[in-house]
Length: 336
Image 1 (tube, helix red, strand yellow):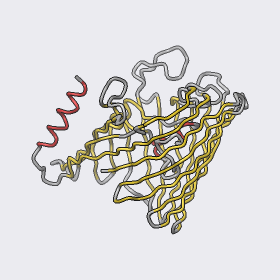
Image 2 (image 1 turned 30 degrees about the horizontal axis):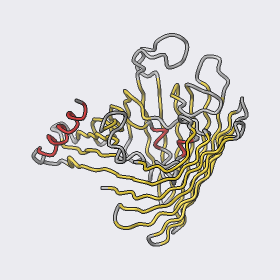
Image 3 (image 1 turned 90 degrees about the horizontal axis):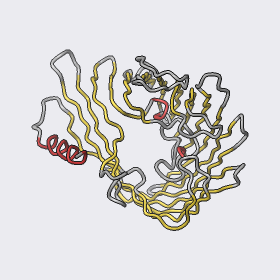
């Protein structure tokens, strides 16, 4: 039923006549298929598993519809986006052809944009260009928490201010979930809050974000809900691109004193069609002393507009357990 609704919606949008002053609806997507050889000993916190052999993976392939159109009030526009994950290799996602990713609707005007739905939090978004291995086993999400796509989230984003500054502020009602772990269901308007400052100019990107009572997702110290502080920085100078990210996750539960500290550094060298890249980092639990360490190497070759062929190798190590997860792969990524 869900798949039928998605397909019917796409067909309806595609048949709509053009709206004066409208951008869209625009169909877009990404298909990222890779063939990988893995040797996993259960180092990952993201559903650790023991496995060895060959895999064909979809790597968060997706398809979406987005657009906007003018309204009759002031200079307001309606904006919308509906993006769904697709499993190219297996044909379904947990029994469904489509899985929800970022989906929202909202209003845009001279004073900024307000959107509501389910989408990446401001803190997640400031990973920006720092993560050179996004969607692969070398992704920072394998060892750093806070990569949340939140339900029931409402966000305000300013226009670009002061030579490149953008501010985002978002909140989510918990809708009767016990997000702070005190045994009582939350029914407030802003039970989870996320905000960010982003500045981008002349090849430099710098950002700072903070969240309260957010799902930790990955935690070496065993944190369930976290207050998160993240900073990221990247700089592109000619062919060279450098990036860094640091994060502190503190236990948000009553009386909690657990804490994770994470760092990531990345670099890429762009030479005509070829890009060589590397990144490495670690997350350390302040209470347990446990550490997760990641490093990855890779090369991308641009075949055409929006199309890459790539190879990469990544390794994730978990110190106390003495386990390693290794992956080597080659693939093709298409954007349309």
